Length: 71
Image 1 (cartoon, rainbow, N blue to C red):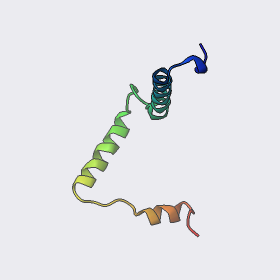
Image 2: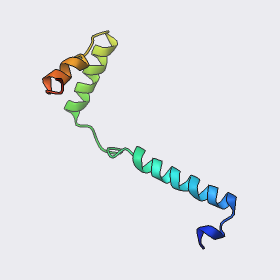
Image 3: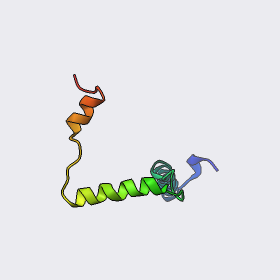
Image 4: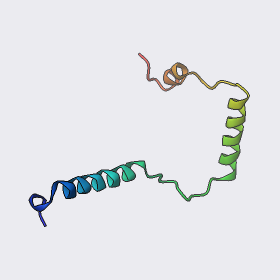
């Protein structure tokens, strides 16, 4: 079947399906189902605890400066 043979509704459904498949490809989590190493999990927990306690991280400007991304 060719596109010219599709009804308007069939074409819309085809486009909708194509867009959904494309979005799923972009939004797919490559790490899904993988295990987190215990030391990484501990680092994440500590980071969350510091954030919940009100501690602020490194300001964006400082990170950019450290990485040589500022003029």
